[in-house]
Length: 565
Image (cartoon, rainbow, N blue to C red):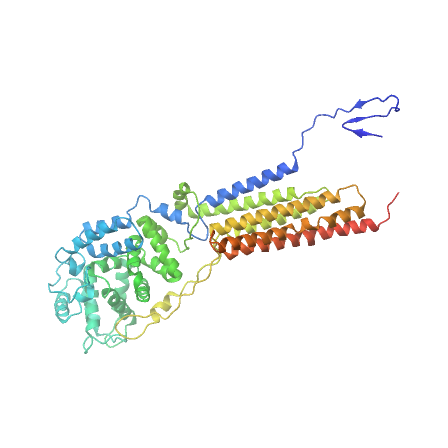
């Protein structure tokens, strides 16, 4: 009997009667290939949308930090404002930091700072002299910048003049600091002994700062508490540590710059960390000073520099390029700043205000993209011989694989371990030159990959996924044939080269990447090169061990089973 194209014949061969079957109208099924293509395309769209959001949950996106600095004074503008206010000393530090950050307008700014230094008194104090300050010639010069504050307090003439000034001061706090000089120091020489000039000059500097509101509220209150605990002839480690830190600062900064910095310092512990960082890395002084003054959070900037080393230095420079808003925004988080991250600039202002919300939204889009990719791949691999459970397990497994591939490069997994703050102040050497930190900052390694590496791995992965789908379809096609089991088994063996295609493609990708790197046509990256070979091995192992082996086993059993009537 013959049945085809919707008609049938039951009449004798002399006269055939054709009867057409007209099926009832039913919705036309969507081809599985179209469904798979649509799901995979949607997955790519969602992944692109997620990667375009300039936010992370475990890191700071540079575009968001840059957006936080818009409509706020830039580093150059802040320095020019200080020059206009008669403070060329701190403006010089900001100008040096701006030049290191590569900002425009630094030549004009340097000229303005030099002109400000020519004002009488500015060379000695870095700005206006404190009210009632004694007049005397400073001990030395500091090149084109203002003199260090130590030059105004350490000489015999300066100490004699300041001693008279402090003893007659109307500030109870200033007099209390000077009256506490009889404590027994351990790292200084006592004031009343030969060699006690550094401690005497530092106490006079501390008293003068207290009298002229040179400390923040928190730092000033903590210092008064330390002074109140000091007893004649007994050690006063807290007060002595503050003296040591002020001595370190006064030998590096002018009076006005010290005041600008100390008015942002929250407590003695932050001051201790700041000076320890400067001693350990003297070249970071301009950057750290500028970032601390602009952000108003010196303890946050110090912690970032200490914990992240050269990367932290680069993050401070990036904040200085953004301006005051970027510096304050960076000070509000301890998360690292990622390098070379792509994103849509028009979303940056929103992500700077809603950083965590944007980060979680991005992760949600990535999870949804992985679900679409897993479902699309499962539909593409579908064959009629499998049950619902097998299809569901395959969809879940593919979704998990897609989620892993998307989530691993999505966030900087790992991080830095923070050094203990207490260790910074206790690990010091004896002497009057300052504290030397013996503690080591231990930095962890974070998993980060460049955009080009991610793109290359994604291309190799897409090619291997295509090979995997092709092999699965060929296996399903052979199993669905009406030929005897022995014939289908031979056909399965005939497709051996196709089942090894993933390995051939992986080796070709690795060889091509290495050749391009040797020719210097692309940047050298062994991870991108060898990932192709690794994914080829995984694809071939998955195809042969999981699918081909199972299909052959079924065909062998079917070939040995006697056919039933």
